[in-house]
Structures are given as structure tokens and as C-alpha cells.
Image (spheres, rainbow, N blue to C red):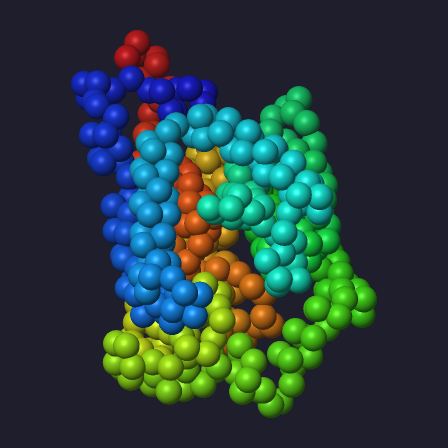
Length: 390
């Protein structure tokens, strides 16, 4: 029956791959993705020159690298978005295996670049953060397991996906990278909810997350320091949150003007984790609202298209990928405006970082592929067509 739905004969002549892709892809989401990338370059021009000068580099060193990584990420997006869901599933399984092994080997071969968390591989010219590539692969791999559990003789996919999620959370927390660990478990929980999880189970997972958070607070000085700083009634103006908060206040609605911001000279991560503070200070609330709108546009349009999707794997995978994008953006912006504790998480497509930009391109390419228009005929119509020999 699945073949009848998705491989139903069509009167349309055979199309070129690019033509078929352009006809079926969500062009509004594609435009929003390109707009976010261009905003990232604009903010990179504003935020990164001070860091380059401090490091004795060409003022546009980081902007040039961001453009190169961004083009690579957009190229990956275009290629992946033209793939079939079956091919994406195979690609994701291989990528998940490679990223999982890379995370396992981080304690031996990884580096922390002086930030207190071993998350990267240093390859001299570039550095690679495997957790960035793990996230989109995890969403698709988990969707495959969950969809398989609906087959009559299928494996216990939901249970297996839960075990995989917990293992990843433990590995990421050991780095420590509690932000990515929380993102993984939240993505799994929402995908499981879409797959029909009972509310009691979802509540149990939530309680488990809170218990784990309390354990981390009691046993990790790194976590305790960040949570205490978040809960404090006063913000130390010499901390990253203090600089970001002041920049957002200074920006107001329309900003202080391009090049007139000061936070980029004092905030170490102004071009990565706190890029939204630069946007708020120099361009004001108007640009921040546009950025949030673009993320919402991608997520909402993707979910609306997935509601009509019959294939469970495509529905679950698309939901996971959309949720990943939306929650990562929400966490990054929430940290900057002090709604969430500091997490050390990039803003997709906007923050500087090769791993982040390329992984975002791959993940969004998968999302565009999952949300492409496909025949969704009613079963009664298909049966009637078969009865008439069509």
C-alpha cells in the first residue's frame, strides 16, 4: 500500500532532478534559510573584526571563513534536499555511527580550547565539533527506529530509541555539554509524543530530566556556577550575560547604528554564542524580531506540511529536524536575554563556526527533503483506481 501511495503512476513526464526539486520544495522555507545566512554574514561583519584584531589577524578573517563555511553548508543543503527519504535515512545512519564513534573518542583525542569542555577535534586548519553533526543524524535515526516499531513484526523501536537517547545524553554530559544533552532528550521526547507516547511516560521523562539536572547541580561546579548566576537577582556586568544584557538594553527598538556597538569589543563570544546581542545593540529589536520570525516560519511551515504526510518515518524525521532547529534557536536567544542559564550553543546559520554552519546545512537539507510535496491520495481513490485497472 505504501508503494501505491508514493509510487503511484503519474501522467507527468519524467523530470530533471533540479526541476522536480524546485517544483516540490518549500520555497518559503528555502528563502528564510537564505535570509538567515545573509543576516549571519551581516552580523559577522559587525561582530568578528574586533576579535580578529585582538588575535593579530586580518580584520575580515572570520567573516571570510564564515562565508566559505556557509557556502559549503548551503551546498550540502541543496544536495541533501534533492535526495529521497530512503537515501537520507541511509546517509543519516552512517553519519550517526561516525559521529557516535567520534564522541566516544573525544576524551582521548579531543581538545577543549581552554573552555573547560572537551567538545572539539583540532585539525590545525579547522576544528570539528562532532555533536553538531550528531543532532540531525540522531533525529533521522530515531525516526527510523520509531517508525519500524509500528510494523507488525518490527523491532521495539521506541524502546531502542530511548536507550540510544539516554546513552547520548550521558556521553554529552561527560564532556560536559549539558546544552546539547538537553536538546537531544527534548527532541526525542517530542518525537516520541508525535509517535503516540502516553502522557504518563512523557511526564516520567520530564521528571527524570529534572532529577538529572539536580544531580548535575549538586555534583558539577561548572553547572552550579551557571545556574547560580542565572538565578541571582543581580547580574555581574563583567560576565558574558552582563555584557549581553547591557547591549540589548542599549539597542532599543532601532539600535545604535551599524558599527557603533561596543559589546563586540568586550564579549569574547560575540561572533558565536552571543551573536544576537550584537544584533540587538547595533540593529535593535527590529532585526531580532525578523530573525525570530524567520525561524518560526521554517518550523511552522515544516510542521504544517508534515501533518499531511502519511509515511510515519518522514513525519517523525521531519518533526525531529524542525524541533531541533526551533529549540536550538530558542535556547541561544533565551540565554542572551537571560531566560535560560548559559548553555554555550550557537544560533543556527547565523553564528560563526564551521561545524555549526555545515551541520545546519545538512540538517535543513534533510528537513527540506522530508517536507517536499508528494502524492497524498486518499486510499479510497487508490483502490478505485486499481479496480478500474488504472
